[in-house]
Length: 180
Image (cartoon, rainbow, N blue to C red):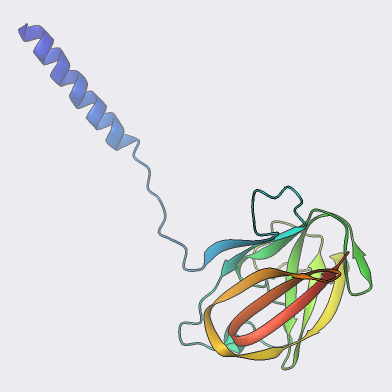
């Protein structure tokens, strides 16, 4: 009996020590949370058209222009470059985009953004952006909303001939048309 109690205590002590030795150190939450926008938005719908995966930077008292400067290629979010997946062939302007996954970059300007679909994947930021790998580009006018958004946001909406990827941050709004 005494030997059984000692064995049980030794076993419990060993388990406790080994659990501490193998404990994982998890990183803090990312300051720019990752999000996904898809169309249709109902995940049960098998007829997916597109989805975009991106990180959502916050203004935190800064201007959009500080975080996404005019005239410079922007990763369209934070952290890794945003990735857009088309589940069927689509068009951006007059350019056909084959079904697949691409990076989504933008070049902000005062009154418009150049939207870029690029074939490079798993890219951090826009540091390694290569224009020669662009698949499509389209200049999209900027509109101004009355409501300010603290976090950069994207959402798809239905259009008569396809879908629109809506982007917003602070009072800046973009409507990027993708047609079938």
